[in-house]
Image (tube, rainbow, N blue to C red):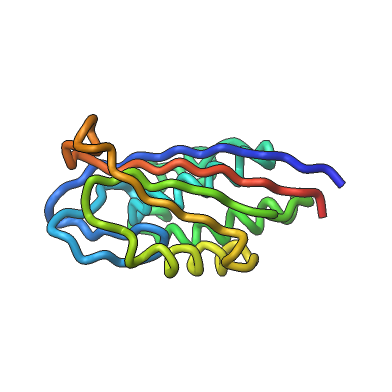
Length: 159
């Protein structure tokens, strides 16, 4: 049985009059994330980690922002599609570890729901999905509340 690991990173700008969805959770906040889809920065990083582990490129190849089918798309549904494609290639997800970098809002109250949303989309137990949140002590673009970034790694194995 072969194992492979993939890494993902994503970033989205913060702006007024946008909704904030992270890990499939709607978070009430004065600003939201800008993107072609729902701009779920965490789910996008995880999608890239899964695709990378399977040697299947990145989300830009599978869900280009030039394609109106993905305008305001639900990223959790996009993750389900990535998992389906990985399965067709003979891979299943073993575990995911991720970190959201955001000065605001505080994400601790949403972590469990994010883990559950991601796990459900991936067809794995929530204890195989880890989500962490951190600030950058007011440094950089995330510290200045200009955007939010996320990092993820994913381990897959042959079915």
